[in-house]
Structure formats: C-alpha cells, structure tokens
Image (cartoon, rainbow, N blue to C red; front, side, top):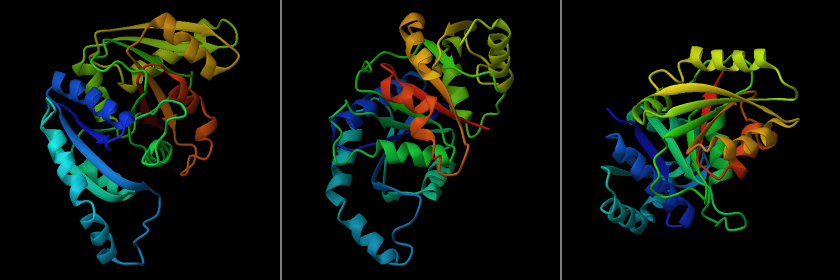
Length: 274
C-alpha cells in the first residue's frame, strides 16, 4: 500500500506546485493525497476558551474554499480527499497521521520575496518539526514531473533513531532510488564518513533501496558543505535529519536543516530523529 501525502493546499503558486509534485509522487507508487487547508498553524488552540461554536462558524465561512478544493481533486491523477481545519495544531497533525496511516506532510516553499499572506510554511515547519512528523518541502525551482531516482542523505556522525518515519522508509523503497550518503567535515576524516554511513544503514532509513554509496565533502560550514554537494551529487531529492533539541525547536532557523531547506534547488525531505 502506498503512502498518504498530506499537502498543505491553497490557491497560490507554491502550494499548487507542491500539490502537483505530490500528485506525481503518489501516482507513481499507488499512494493517495490529502488536500489539507488550514487558516493558521499554532501550538495553541485559539478556540480553547471561545468554544467550538466559534470554530464551526469559521469553518462554515470556508464553504466556497471547500468547493474549489473538491473541484481541484478532479484534476489530479491520484485519489484525493479534502480536509479543512481552522488551525493546524499538534493534536490535529497527530490525528491526521493516525487516520491516514503512513502519512507524510508536503509544503510548497515560495520563491524568495513572493510569499503570500496565505503562506504558512515557516510556522508549519516549526510546528511539524516540534511534533516530530516528516515533511517534504518543495521549492519554487523544483521540476514539476521529475520523480526522484537519486537521493542524497546528508548526515553528521551522530547515531540516530527514526521517529514517525514509516512513510519515509516506504517512500524510499517504493521509488527504488539510488542513495548517496553525504558527510561534511572540516578536514579529511574517512572514519567519520564511515560512521555516518553505518548510522544511516543501522537506522533502517535505506532498507530496500537500490544502492547506497558514500561521499565526503570538505567545508568549515556544514550547511554550506551540504549545499555545495548538491550540484556534484545531482540528486532529485535531499534528505536531512531533524533532531528535536527542544519542544519549540527554538534553534531551528539557525540550524543546518533550515539553511538547506531555504536554499536547496531540489525538494528536501525532513526526517525526524532522536
């Protein structure tokens, strides 16, 4: 059974690009789509004290949006469901992943300087990372119909355990990708590279993939090193790890993961680990 791709959907270019990318990805492996429309992403429920009646009133105002989203599903190649919520809360995300088993969130990243008021990317990434759910980020420059055949996994030399990542491992198995593990060091360190590869294989992330090789890159800055590796490895998809250092992920915007997401020319799959 294919995975479920839960796509943060609105009618702006970044979200529509991500939706069509997810449609091709799901169609190729017998998966399904969920068109998820939310007005806000928040760690706290704004209606906790106001009451459910106010939430229902807000959702009633989204009737036209729901109609257009349903119409949008008829233009896709993959079976799709529409889900509307006033707020993407941690418990809402958890409920979606529970109901749509093997779920993976998909977010479109707008072109620099073209983020619309509807764009929820930054807050949503923070929330999903804090809740430890995998997220596929599709940049403005991503090709619309190219399925990932070569995957680059960027890792440090710390061991890790996958969290909520059944959809990630199944995706990599289904697309039968060739995997290149990339490790960035300040100076040549073959032992560190070998440890990085061992940790990736030991985690189960690459189980069932077509092939796995190893590349080391030299750079004083890990994020810059990963970005410089991309044109040399030529991946269709980059996988980065997201370690939950704190609940709110306060350092996320200064992390290697955040810098790679912001500047990668190809889609980035953010995998939660401990």
